[in-house]
Length: 167
Image (cartoon, rainbow, N blue to C red):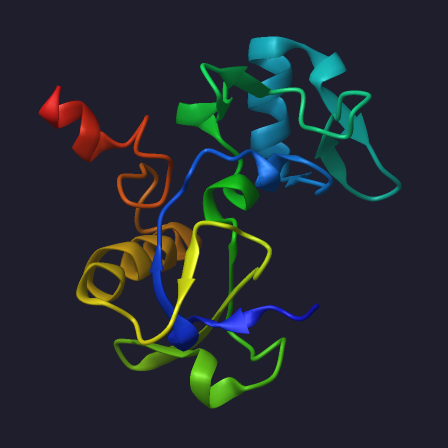
C-alpha cells in the first residue's frame, strides 16, 4: 500500500504498540551504526550488501524493542536512528508516492513532500487539527532536515519531553 499524504491526517499520537519495530528493516547511516556498535556491540546490527541495518529477533521485531507493562518501548529512546524517529512519516524533496499537491509541505521558500505509512494505528484520518499542524508535523519535518534531534511530540508520550516536564 502506498503512503498517504499528510494533509489527510487529522492527528497522530504514538500508542507504543510496537508495530513500527516489527517487520521493517531499519537502515542505519554510518554514524548511527558506529554509535550502536560502540554502546551495544556489533551483534545488534546486521550488514547488508550495501547498507547496515538494526538486527531483528527471531519474531522479526527489532532487538531494541521491549514490552514494559503492556507497552512496546524502544531501549534506544534517546539515540534512535533517524528512520525510527521519523516513522510513520516519509519526508523527501520529491513527490515519491504521487498526490504531490496533497503531500506538499511549505518550508520557507522550499517545498517538501510528506507522506505517512497508513499501517500506523496512531493515525487519525481527517482534516489536520491544530496540534498536528503546529507541533507534530513541524517536529517531524525539523527532524528530517536536521534542525532538531530531540523528540517531544513525535514519540510515545511515555518518553516525551513534554510528559517528563509534568512529572
